[in-house]
Length: 136
Image (tube, rainbow, N blue to C red; front, side, top):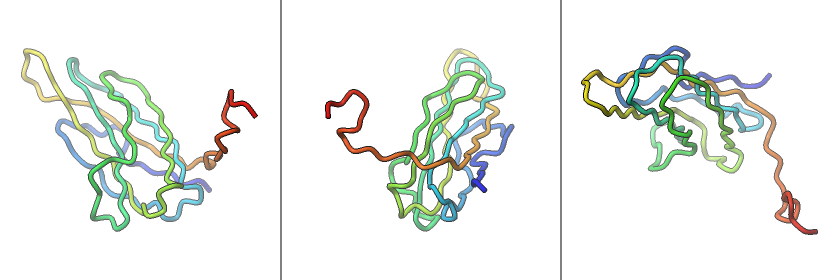
């Protein structure tokens, strides 16, 4: 049974920068996940940056994310693959979000979001000569 994780529960309203709760991924068989970010509401003149951070102990999260999703401005769905197979030390993950607002009016930035991860088959490893278009 594939592992299903809610890094940010659906319909979570965010109005300031923040971190999600840590989730244990040590039981994952493939250590590869399809990440689906869904934005269901937002106001204009703002941006959302979502990143995923990894930790060996659930306390120390390092200085760089293990995945950064493309910056978003509007409602919709964004997908990315998180491959932890080359990071065997990572036992826990969590999401981090950063909001930015510009313009003349003063409301707080606001997005309604969710970030769901579904374990998928491991990404195939290819030798350099096996890449598309490579000569043999």
